[in-house]
Length: 62
Image (cartoon, rainbow, N blue to C red; front, side, top):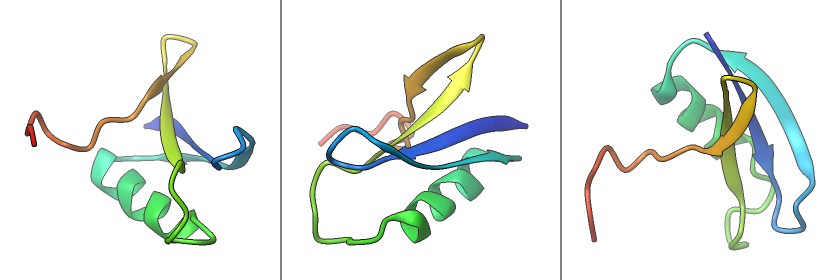
């Protein structure tokens, strides 16, 4: 289990939760955003005591 947090465009943490899988974390992130049209929302995961950007691209490039 890992700890994830949602950060709004202003840099404020809006939600934190322990979640079993990255897929479940991504679904929670999508549901946790109040305004889906606003850019700048992000999700981070806690790893070894540090917060890191959560990458859900699975290695894909655009």
